Length: 230
Image (cartoon, rainbow, N blue to C red; front, side, top):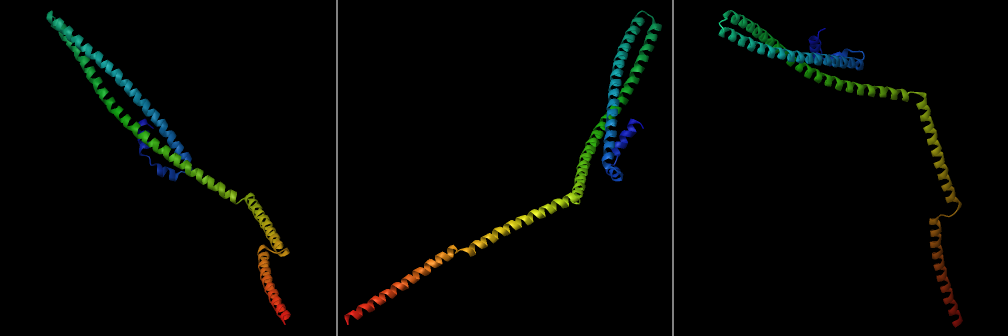
């Protein structure tokens, strides 16, 4: 396939359709990028050769222009010496140089068009290459995410995970048992001796009894004084 047809095919390619139909999108996008990079190198090489050809043709045109001027001077010299035959021959050579120069200029024009086409193709290929690399990054990220999900699901479904979860359950049961023992000891402490609230309530009750006893003593003392008076 020629460089021009390959370039046009790549520029016109529909990445979405190609990737949707591919069994391995990651491999397909790598192949696309490789093809584009190789084509881009070839297009640049062709453009470089075209530029080199143009420069060489321009040098030939300059030489032919000088040759035309030289034959024109020779024709004038021959004519001044009454050698019309030589002057005519010199003008023939001048015409040949002029025709060759014109032909080279036309070829240079064709190369100018080809070079402009190369430049456009290079810009389009670079754009498509950036697009492909962006797609490659997106595909790689999606592929990594999918692989991580598969690994996670595989891990969650293994016996090692079940064993780890079982160990967590055992640890939770041990913590529950330790907390239960602490609560039981706390209850035992409360039944073995009076609590702070009970002691304070007892003090308040003792004060009430002392007050009542003091009143009874006062009442008895008063009654005893009445009996002595009689």
